[in-house]
Image 1 (cartoon, rainbow, N blue to C red):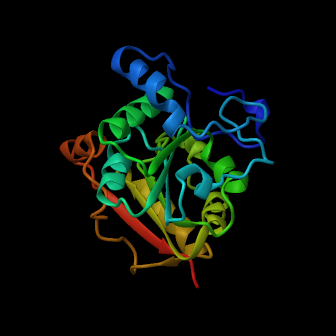
Image 2: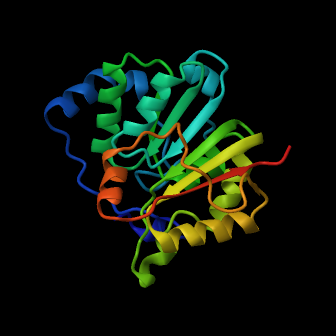
Length: 236
């Protein structure tokens, strides 16, 4: 876990092992220069120097709609989305290095030019790295629910996080969320309704068709848990 003395708020993640082996290590070494946004750090090794600004046009070599996925895991969803929508650009944010390496491996295998990855703490990415009003969509799918009551303060989706998302979205931009943890879903709904964003539905959204069923989501279905979707829009 990252040392909490570096940040005023607890982070929403626990650092897992960062060792790369086999095909992941090979893919990372061969392709990270193409896919990795190597951000300057502040104090912690997943921090972002607050002076740094992401230049999407320079990173992708074009101007296109930009979608940010927070917690991209092994890259199943974002790689599929990037392959299906070559006219859009995608930035995957993840702290778990093997997950990033797997994402890069998938992206390289698919010959993708419209995907980049960054290893960083998501609130810092939204607070300073991403230019205000520059994102077409933000995806927050299956972030850690921290089910124990004493750990709920570590959940990613908070009122402060919702306003960071709103800051980063362009007018009309969308924030898509999904979780299989009912209490977290209710908390997300409460936070969204209190934010400056507008719910696209009366409450829960239909399942986002642009999100493939990943191995993680499939496990939730097999365990009998209900997956809740939410979609919020930034007012024009």
